[in-house]
Structures are given as structure tokens and as C-alpha cells.
Length: 64
View (cartoon, rainbow, N blue to C red):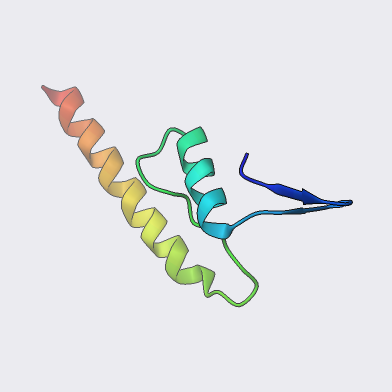
């Protein structure tokens, strides 16, 4: 895990942590890390659209 420890605190770069979590999850892309000021509804819509296209691809493969 790409973290740096300084005394009792742990720090990580958002980009490095995102890439690491994506690799650990077996994804081709980095995962998205939410912050306090983000609009999560847009991320949810994008994730649902991605999940729907993935399910459609699986159904088409199963029909063959």
C-alpha cells in the first residue's frame, strides 16, 4: 500500500492510492476516491451506466 508513516499519522497520495486500489480490485482503471466536496450523484450515474453496459455484454455472450 503506497502510504508514508510520520509518527502516528499515515499519509497517501490520492493518485497513488487510487491506482493501488484499482489494481487490488482487479480493475483496468484506477478507482475513484470521493471527497467531502464532490457531487456523488454524477459518479453514481456513471457507475450505474457502466454496470448496465457490463451486464448487457454478459447477456449477449451467454446467448451465443
